[in-house]
Length: 344
Ligand code: PHE
Image (cartoon, rainbow, N blue to C red; front, side, top):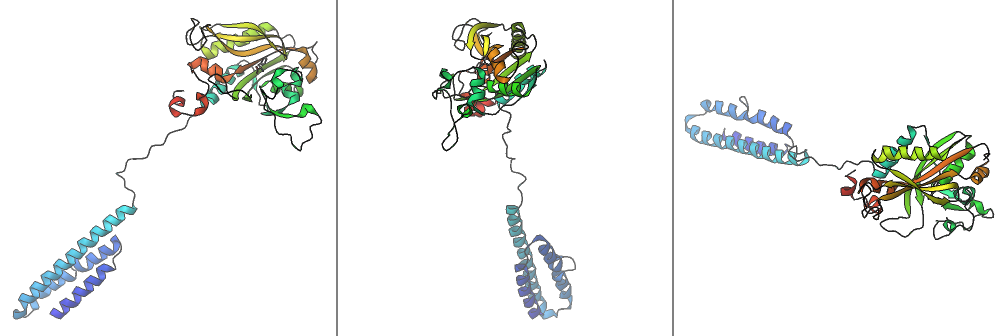
């Protein structure tokens, strides 16, 4: 009988070693520790053990029972800690992700576009890489105009390329106006379009200027378009975008592609015309250049200047948003500091 117990001892020790998961452990428990298991059965056998052996048998049986219990508990603990390590800890706090939003320039481009779409303008897109013809020649900007200088325009590398036709010299567009040329070349009036996009100028970077920024170009060509239509359209825009109480004004100006030309100012949004740092104490902030399409431009794109008139305007987006929200430095748009971007 006692030999039998010793055998069971080593059997138990071997078996617990091969238990590697909770299912195996349950099998082990059923086999040894359940009501009809090995240990319980051995206790039942106690009554058949001869009297003189009962004492020792009982003692060893108790030891076996303790051993089985201990092995079972130990295994249970080691299995549950190792399973926790590989399992998901549902008590851990969730990770937070910063949700992205649209950049305020994209939002402004959309908002401004939709203001013009409401009064019948269509949105067009022109290429960022232009050529001298579309960016300058067609827009009545002669070769000696200062904006054609390398100091102002980013010309692209022409090494190894045929540039016998100078008007095809590639460059990064310096304004959205070449888009006007492309639309007038390919569409018959009436034309009512806006062209939002990036433009590039070789400028020193400062709080007020960058070498890359955004513009929105507007063009309306039809019979009998007047300067009054231009003024009315820009007034409508300023009221929609800045609010009803802000006035606009026009100052005479010059652009080779419009005649007459004007600069559009809007009352300073920050000081409401009293004078502050943003408006350089004038009470007004410039937001756009505009004018009536120069008849020479119509000729250059193959439209009859005796039949058609038109107006055009070009608005700087960053500057316009700066006026609206009182942003002091144009570089903030591109630093992508989320503390800044989150405010819009
Ligand atoms: N293209 C001009 C600029 O970039 C703005 C403009 C557009 C002026 C259309 C008149 C008409 O400064």
